[in-house]
Amino acid sequence: MTANLVLPAVLRPTAMGQTMIATEAATVGEALDRLADEWPQLERRLRDEQGRLRQHVRLYLGDADISDLDGMATKLFDGARLHIIPAVSGGSC
Amino acid sequence: MTDVVLLIGTRKGVVLATRQGHGGWQMDPLQLVMSEVYGVGIDQRRAVPRLFAGATSPHWGPSLFHSDDLGRTWSEPDHAPVAFPEGTKTSLVRIWQIQPGSTAEPDVVYVGAEPHALFRSTDGGLTFGLVEGLFQHPHRTEWAPGGGGACLHTIMPHPTDPRRMLVALSAGGVYRTTDGGSSWEPANRGIQAYWMPEDQRFPEFGQCVHKLGSHPSAPNRLFAQNHFGVYRSDDYAESWVAIESGLPSTFGFSILVHPQEAETAFIFPLRADSDRMPPDRQCRIYRTRDAGAHWEPLGAGLPDSGYHSAVLRDGMCTDGGDPAGIYFGTRNGEVFASGDSGDSWQLVVDHLPDVLSIRAATVG
Picture 1 (cartoon, rainbow over the protein chains, first blue to last red):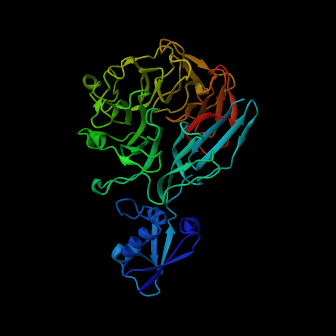
Picture 2: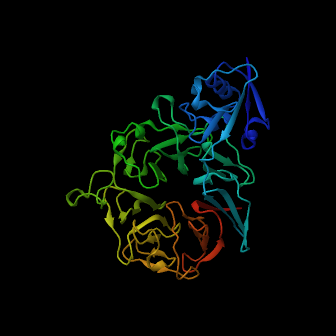
Picture 3: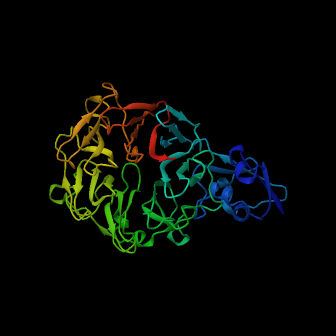
């Protein structure tokens, strides 16, 4: 099945300006693994080298945070949109 | 006339200042915006110096960027240039130090990391591997984080012998290798851990050293600014003695050795860890010209009163020129420069985000 990762503007330069990346994956974790192969510079913005989602990155499937679903095991479906969201908890002043 | 590049890492990005001859400073726009740049480096062993910036985005994590066009553009490899191997179950938090190796190893670059670790590159700083000898050290689990984090913040390759190197960690102390990094021994004899019970103030390791400095012509002579305590070693860290006569406080973060005068060093004292502001609220560099026997305040051109900022551990540097430029950056976002060994100072720039790291080089 084909799901789509929706990128925030700040990450688009790591994927040659794309706003959305189509991926063949059954789960969120699988989608990020595919991303690591195809767009490694983008993937490491989302996960650290041990595969953990970064503290201030949120992934939303539709309007649900995947941490409220099954995390990396959250199942994707054909046409699903997985939004990458920089959490408002991040940042520096 | 020699040009100078000044690479300034701030809490919100990196900025390059350049000066041509005796002209004014030209400031480039801030780059790597909204990244905390705790470590910057300049590798002058290349025809065009390679600039480095260890940048951590609060959202997107850490990376090491480099520039081969003197800061006009920055790039990074697709895969993480600095990362802990899978089996370590450890993740990079930030890069604190970027240090080119000795001239004997022109493609070697070192990175000091948080959590406490040393990385080594043999391709000029594009990819790095973990120095296992230090990471596997039996003391590692007992190294505590300092206030800034569990950082390896100082790397001092020996100028002529690639097998010898010193590193410093907060709060693990000074460690020394003489076999190219395979094994490491603590080198803190004489350095006090003031917070310990009175009869335990000189432990083998665990001191909170903030910065080391040395002169390439005298590599056995070292200077250290500690979390309370300024020290000198004359025997490559075999032992240390306090050098505090004339100082208003022994607390501070940075220490810098003059590039032409091996007995001249600079520090920026802060009143105490409970009052991290300058004594008498005056912006003052303190200088010794006799390896720490005496210190004198330097204030010409610096704010005389009402000053509450600080200089962090990598906030002081030299361009290595002759005559040398000496520079320091503050948490107020100011950078000051001196072309006369600290006798007088000029403001290079102000209103930057707080300065975390700074390096300079002469070019051309």
